[in-house]
Figure 1 (cartoon, rainbow, N blue to C red):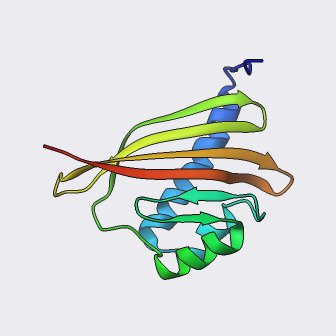
Figure 2: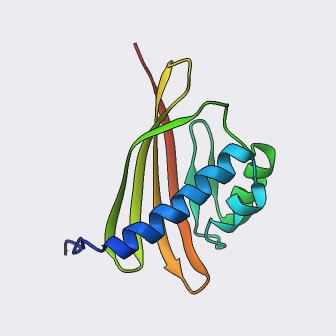
Amino acid sequence: MTPLLLDRPEVVADVHAAFERYERALRAGDVAVLTELFWDDPRCVRFGVADRQHGAAAIASWRRDHPTVPPGRRLHDTVVLVVDNRTAVVTTLFGYPDGAVEGRQSQTWVRFDDGWRIVAAHVSEVPLG
């Protein structure tokens, strides 16, 4: 069964705000916010450029050791795809001033009673040139 993709501007706005909060925390190295925004569950998963974590505890531990990204990170082509009123996928491309790689990031967000949380994330980089 194919999920129904909905045009819900209020959900797009809410998820985009959560995503922007995550991005600000990532740039600032705010580990508390980064940890808060991942689902606190052993089934949560994050695949990084050269790493992977399964479970909220592993993600939080990894984030404490890697709290931020290099300076000058720029996002572009960010899309919030709403699946239903409590599920959305955010995809974005990112780069750095040296222009050596194109970064790709996707996050699946679910609205729980305590707010929007990332349940799965993936980050990759492809060399340019």
